[in-house]
Image 1 (cartoon, rainbow, N blue to C red):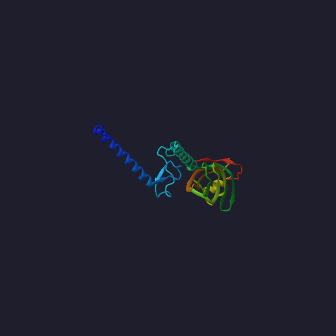
Image 2: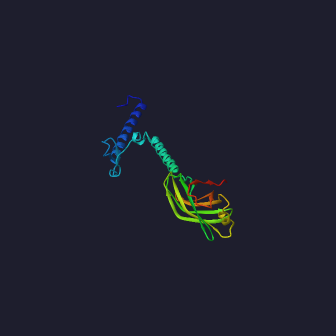
Image 3: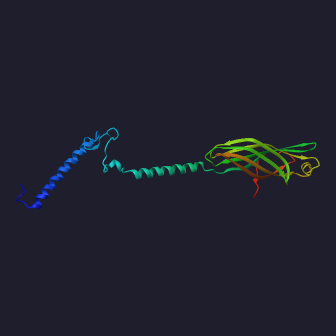
Length: 242
């Protein structure tokens, strides 16, 4: 049939026919090894025997494999975590608890046969600057006169202070006793003096509990008491200079 044609062209036609036959055979073999994808509406094929394992065939160009808002979601998640961390640190960061003197509410003087007893009532302020409640324990007040201990009072359970608030504490019966043959007794009973001013140095300590930690507060104040008579008029006291 191709005898009148050049030899090279005849050989080319034979090669084309062989290629077509091999392609058809390959397609038949491929069809025999694969089946139609049950969820791809007949447009895809999956290996035979894996129909129950493969759900669908998704093309690599499918937009579902390349979400458009991934960077936005990651940025929002990181920003939200940073915001929560900052808020937690802001509200739970320990702040100061302040102990400050207010006034001497009253001082009562009692003369006995062997001395002078002075009962002093003080008012203190406990200021809580935290966003959590503060428990105050073990309030100790010691009264001294130029290094001589005149009396000590201790209160075990003091008060609970709410967040960002201030609580006034009344410390009753800080008792000082001046014994017989003492210079204090002679001074307080000396009738020639119009007033009998006694210098009293108060050393105050308080334990507070807040945010799972204990803190020891200390305060030193001084006041002047008229040990020759009762004085029930409230007056302010001053903190000792450091």
